[in-house]
Image (cartoon, rainbow over all chains, first blue to last red; front, top):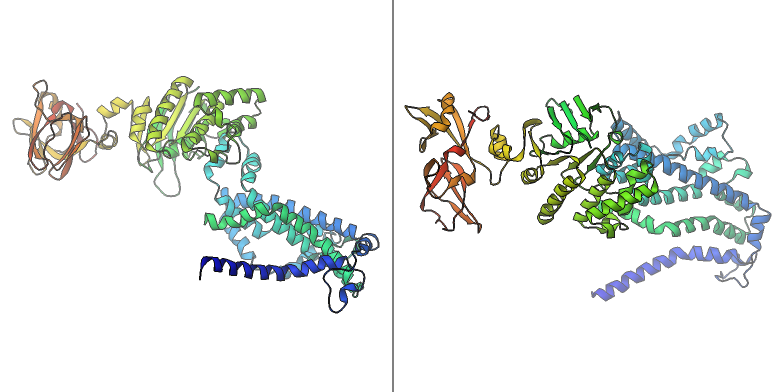
Amino acid sequence: MSERLKKILVLLTASIIAFMSLMPFVWMVFASFMKSGEANVYPPKLIPDEFVLTHYITLFTRLNLTGYLINSLVISVGVTFISLIINSMSGYAFAKMAFKGKKQIFNSLLSAMVIPGQVTMLPVFLMLKNMGLINTYWAILIPGMASIFGIFLIKQYALSIPDSLIEAARMDGGTEIQIYWKVILPLCKPILVTLGIFTFMGTWNDFLWPLIVMTDSSMYTLPVALANLMGEHTQDTELMMAGSVITIIPVIVVFLALQKYYIKGIMLGSVKG
Amino acid sequence: MASVKLENITKFYEGKKPAVDKASFEINDKEFVVLVGPSGCGKSTTLRMIAGLEEISSGELYIDDRLVNDVSPKDRDIAMVFQNYALYPHMTVYENMAFGLKLRKVDKNEIKKRVMDAAEILGIVEYLERKPKALSGGQRQRVAVGRAIVRQPKVFLFDEPLSNLDAKLRVQMRTEISKLHKRLQATIVYVTHDQTEAMTMGDRIVVMKDGLIQQIDNPLNLYNFPTNIFVAGFIGSPAMNFIDGKITDSGRLQFVTMNGTVAMNLGESLSFLKKAVGKEVTLGIRPEDILCKHTDSETLQLLQCTLDVVEPMGNEIFVYTSIESHPVIARLITQDLPKVGMPYNLYLRLNKLHFFDKETGNAIKS
């Protein structure tokens, strides 16, 4: 097979897969602009006869989507920043600092990774309830403050930073906090961005946990609110699609803005071995 | 600038044998001291203890008569240049050099002045805005040195700073660091495994092996009067030749090789060897103390041999032979190329012979 033909075949296959995975999103966007009922006609339509914004207006006026959007934003941004700081601090400590029981603590953390999240849901819920934190942002912020996966990821990355760099900073007069802040964090940027995107997306899209700890409807996050919408407005497909568009826009924006670093972060493992 | 004093400095890692065993010496103000030895001899550990990057297991370390055992690195007022440069990759050359001063809250204009001064001395002014990755190895090393200079520390520490550079650049940087030392009037402790670097740069050299200090002296004394067989073999290139044998005294004091193939009469000047009669000794002679022509001006010992290899270098010729399985290299100043495999006469300068006790390895001295 010639090189050219091979290239064409690969591109063709890739295009078909891309088309298939993009189609639902494209339809979602178009359907959100359709008039009520137009999405359910047969044969199905892709392009609406007339672009209308009624569903978006309904979402933000009657259904109080702004509140859910703020909830989601506060929680996702909060979890992302707090967990990045805590994960990077402990990842750095595990990689570069000498302290008693370091290996044992890290190993026990790693073995805790195999415990499925659902197992700890009830105990964590009860603890939060006893602390009186149910229906507050803290109910999602606190469990999300650190992740073993994040610590592991940053530890592996920080291992590749030469010790002499830290020693040089120490000789230059840096305190431990200054070294962490001015030398380690900037050097960890690619992995922090990658982990940040993971965390942001994971928190933003999370459905089960917010559903459990946010019983008051004013504290709902977007995915929970959207699911509620589905229950109340089963027939209103167009409204549902408009809600979905609002839900995924921030994720797409974050990803597009940071994808340059994100790819660098994912590639790291393969290059450094 | 300042002096550094080590008193019985010892470093234990896990395991019984200390990495550095009771190191005691003093580095005077404005002195350039080189720690040299094979890898694993403890020279870098000693330097790192002076820097404060390693804890001192026992012993006392003084900088300017102040006990600094428990003083953190940043408060010891010292600067260090690392083997792998250790430049901050995310900062420009300027920021790299200014970092230490910024952390110490030095005035901005003062920082600028010091960085520019250092950059000028090192010839890196045009690279100040570049990141380290856009620099060559030699330029990076200059930045690393610059980062140390701007701090104006009491003591400079260099940890094998030239070993990542290619041979030509190494020679160039060597002289530059020597010049810098004169210019800054700095107290410098310099670690290397390269004896040429040690010989050419150091005011004094500390030779170490297996965590123990073997000898401390200026380069020429070290070369001419090594205290033991290790120092004798480590300093000098090509290395000193060693031949095992015995001292005998049957009316005349003689050195006889192990199998008795060579016997040399030891003259009056070596009469102190009488105390070693009957002992097994190792004779040492430097390649340049073997001549190819007889002269009457000094006492020589004839050595008849066959040459295994002849290497003309242009200004001199290295010839390789052996005495009872001990390889012997001679460095001859001649333009007559000897032939390989032919019998050849070499002459050893008797007053340049070194003798070492075979058991202890220590030099036998008058």
